[in-house]
Amino acid sequence: MTLEFPFLDLLGGAIGVLLTLLVFSSLFGDHFLVRLIFYGYVGIMAGFSVVITFNSVIFPLLFQPILEEPIDGMVQVAIPLLLCGLLVFKVSTRFSWVGDLSLAFLVGAGLAALVGGAIRGTLMPQISAVISPFDLERSSLPPEERLPSLVQGFVILLGTVTTLTYFHFGARPRASGPLRRQEWIETLSWIGQFFIAFALGLIFAGLLKAGMVALVERVQALLNFVITLQRGF
Image 1 (cartoon, rainbow, N blue to C red):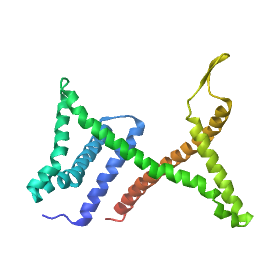
Image 2: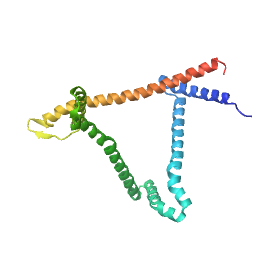
Image 3: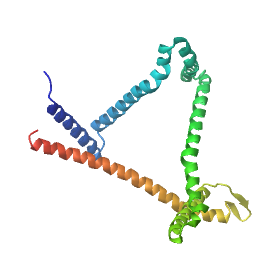
Image 4: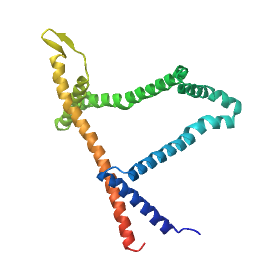
């Protein structure tokens, strides 16, 4: 017996509608079915991550070199296998220090990649955005074209400087009271708070927009399923 595609589409739509309604039912209180759906979602994502990790990392970087060139492959994967084997000692409270070497290598490599990505992806573009409006080559432009660029440059420069100043925590002792930063630093950090609040507001608006898009998509799926049933699928 074979199932036809329309029936499979109807069955998939019914399951999607049921799961959507069960998730929406969490608005009226937590219950077993909602927790079951969340557990299933976490389990599916964990299984999917394991499969992706095996196909993208473990097999091509560990098994494939050994299968293609056994001797050269073993030499290539010897150090990674050693570091992975040292992590087994982390399950023991007595010999957990042995696995610290692998963790130190992992944390060091991760921080190096993070710092490099932050410099190339955030710091350098930010510096370029601050400098480019004040480029001397733009001085040949007419004032009506140069003025908006200069205003934008001043705003970016002010936001960058004041935001960085907000995170300056250096303070000096004073005889009249507790530790406080200098007045000009306090003033710039106060201005930086507005830029930080504006940036956080944009991030929140983006998250809210993404949530609304997902909500509209689910509502549209429910309506399409109901319309399909009314038309006699």
